[in-house]
Length: 195
Image: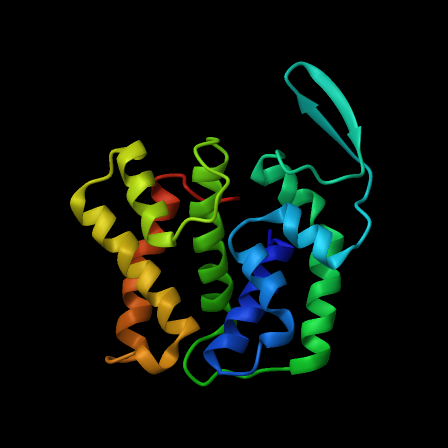
């Protein structure tokens, strides 16, 4: 099942790779990409659908975002805001056809970053914005990943960096997308995904 967040962030990655001006959406995109659902939802301002949350033996009915919500709850609560954000972005940028990567790569890249951040944030180790490089290093320690697995996860991170700053790519998209495929398979095999 496709998550709304992978479509929205995947689309924004495609905007970045095609070097379009994202300045109108800089703070919202930064918040959602870093898994800061509180800042994202409050900046968009959409109401949250009624949900029920089981928390420490209590059932709570909620329609508000809380700064201390775990990432998965924040993700669920952000659904309407994500839809609103996507509409605004699509209205500005329209349909984008990328000549190097399919939409699947952009969407998997979105899941890659958000999944890794969620793994760390849900352990309550930090709610501060941390570089993806440090997120990977910390998860590698926690999950006792091998040096090779850690290196591959960093190659996946570099693929995201090339999407965000395509002018830095010195090889070709086939090479770096192949590296990303290997990194993503580690994410799946180690059960580090959102899904």
